[in-house]
Length: 129
Image (cartoon, rainbow, N blue to C red):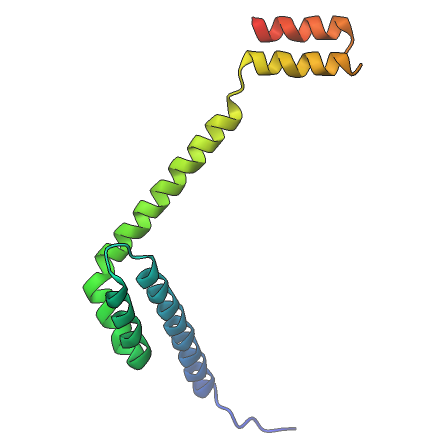
């Protein structure tokens, strides 16, 4: 029987440190992405924040979240609203087809022989009703 040399508490601490490391990497990436997506900051400001984040990453992330965390969230909400407007606009454009478009499609199907004259007339009556 082999004896275990890695106690349970050490496993816990290892997992905790691993979780903290993953959290740190995730925060670093989110902050760097926000720095480059920010339109209210010039090129030198972005470069300064990036250098600060690279030289002192933990302090840089904390200072960035304190100094610009609110505007970071506002930019994200504005971006999500813009995406929702674009999606709604796209869905409405795709979903709304005029009766003339429908009739043109039916006429094309009839011309290719997919629909008979009776089927065409029935579908035409549905569209025009």
